[in-house]
Image 1 (cartoon, rainbow, N blue to C red):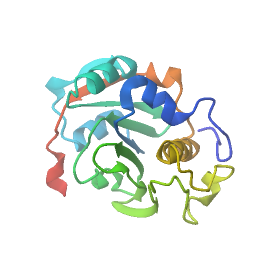
Image 2: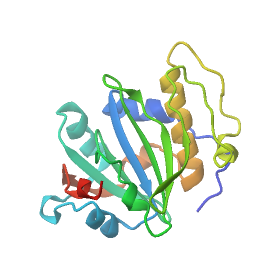
Image 3: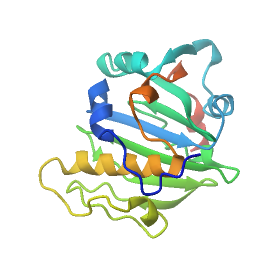
Image 4: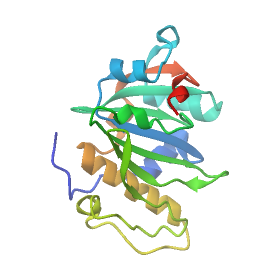
Length: 200
């Protein structure tokens, strides 16, 4: 895995997602698990799975508000789950067994940008509040990954700027930023909702 702890992405991470239709709603889970293990833990129906790149599935998810989840490889040791919504309980159990998991989500019309949550072994070990002002307040554990990112609030587009910061921190921790190649990565799309909320 590349060491990106102080690197900056080539593209604004929020704007890249927004350009693919995730401006109003987004749910992203980065998990230290392989794809089959992840799909099994989410109890996704293998019969509903389709091989597809995220760039193709994103149009279906965002334009038609289709309830589906896309699972694909992100970087060595990390997989990613993408949708416009996710398990109501956030999927905390995916981090069991001392696995790391990062959650970034927003729903502009309902509650805006949610906190960036970092889970390990089923527990939140660090979080950054999703403040509407865009102020970035990383805890000590995540501070090394927030180096060089704007900290002050911004009255216009503060949430968008903070979403970019959250996604930059995720990229630094997982060893890969979002880019056009990331959207073209082969993965699998599944029907949603899964039955995994029974863990909550």
